[in-house]
Image 1 (tube, each protein chain N blue to C red):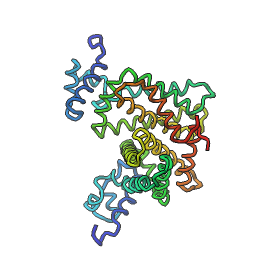
Image 2: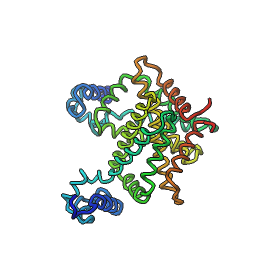
Image 3: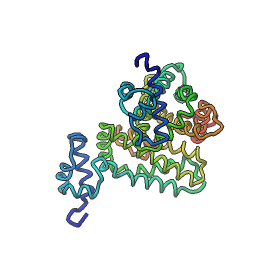
Image 4: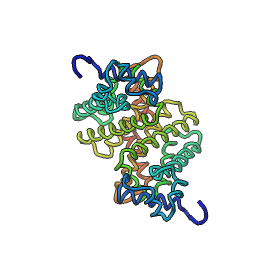
Amino acid sequence: MGRWEPDARGRLAKAALELYDRHGYEQTTVAEIAEAAGVTERTFFRHYADKREVLFDGSQLLQARMLAAVHDAPAATAPLEVLAGALDAAADVLQERRSFAARRQRVIASHPELRSRELMKLALLSDAIAAGLRERGVPGPAAGLVAETGIGVFKVAFERWLDDPSEPQLGEVMRATLDDLRAVTGTVR
Amino acid sequence: MGRWEPDARGRLAKAALELYDRHGYEQTTVAEIAEAAGVTERTFFRHYADKREVLFDGSQLLQARMLAAVHDAPAATAPLEVLAGALDAAADVLQERRSFAARRQRVIASHPELRSRELMKLALLSDAIAAGLRERGVPGPAAGLVAETGIGVFKVAFERWLDDPSEPQLGEVMRATLDDLRAVTGTVR
């Protein structure tokens, strides 16, 4: 992480994703990723535990932003509106990374081990959001339900966003998906 | 699976769960499971691919029953009611297995590899329910959303059921959780 390796971390992530997408996740070695990023294997392992972790570098930031939104919502905010704020925060993180996200999604879908890891990250995110809601005074069972629902909305909206060639704003797709949920559960607005 | 091994499969599952719960999943060997069930290791491997799969023997039945409910619901049924029927079907499968389910849940929560596997099974179940809803004519995006929501309700209700010492009917807990979802999304009833 010295001055002779400006943004080695970012270059490694980009190189890895490109190699995984082009040649397959299994087929790509750490040596190849390091070479493509112009660093040594040792540098790779200073930044990432293994070649899987390169794909999950953004999870921590996403979770931190969503939890901050849950924490910072005004006291009287209804749980579903707190959730909507957390989804907005997620959209802000992801909006500028659409092509990266699309490529990453393709790689993850191609390999059960990666899909498994992604599901685990989302389950932990759901647990963390539920804990954040409980801290706000939302009763435990409702907190768990809102958090699980939120992850469901997130997954569906995220896929809609990537699939839509008109490249809409992710925040709008999130809000529209939340409205669809209200419609499907029979809400009057 | 000869006549000299009546219900070897069931006895292996019971023995495995008991050993995992008592001594830990990592610590238990296939040899120990086979011995506790009174069969050979070879018999174990005739029934299960590995010691993890023993814990997921019920997933297929659960999925089959839920999908049958989705398929068999009358044509005019609203998507959320189709989902409610699938949750009823799941409850029917699980109701008589509460103590087995509680023990299994404890074992799965204790080990990331098992939790991961459980999450993957639920994700595949969600995909299958979404496909079943699409076959009924529910538009793709709504089908995915209802399926994801359904899995969320299932997970929350299942935990509520196991945590409630009054041992309520799982079907009632599922319906109550679905009502909570309606309440939280702001429905009038």
